[in-house]
Length: 152
Image 1 (tube, rainbow, N blue to C red):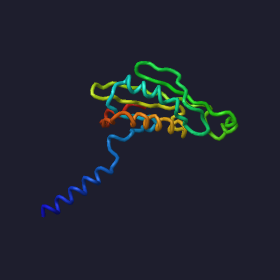
Image 2: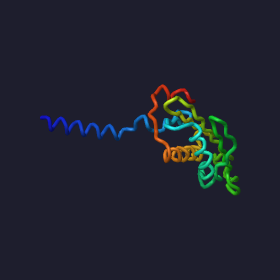
Image 3: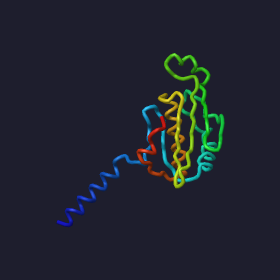
Image 4: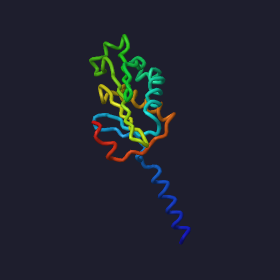
């Protein structure tokens, strides 16, 4: 009987590990990404400043260009490449803008990424790539539902 209970418990733990949990990227209805990390805001912003310009949102857009950086935020833009401009009538934005804000919560950080246009495929892809850059360097921190809400 004990062996059966232990086997059942092991299966339940494996199933729980497969369910997306609080370590996943929280994406709001309006396309805002909210992710928790362990680190300092300076480290996060330094890494984004260093690696962001290596990111190309899609083949139709140029690499991200740093527009500004403050103590808690960084902003990038990317322009539609020459020759692709005639496709703007298909719904592609002439440029995209990505803003990442870092909120220090003491033990952890909350990184909030907004894109303009918010649901544009290239904008979403750029934000996913920036999160991958952060994931390569920083440990994720689980956010509560309350922490992840309110970033529309």
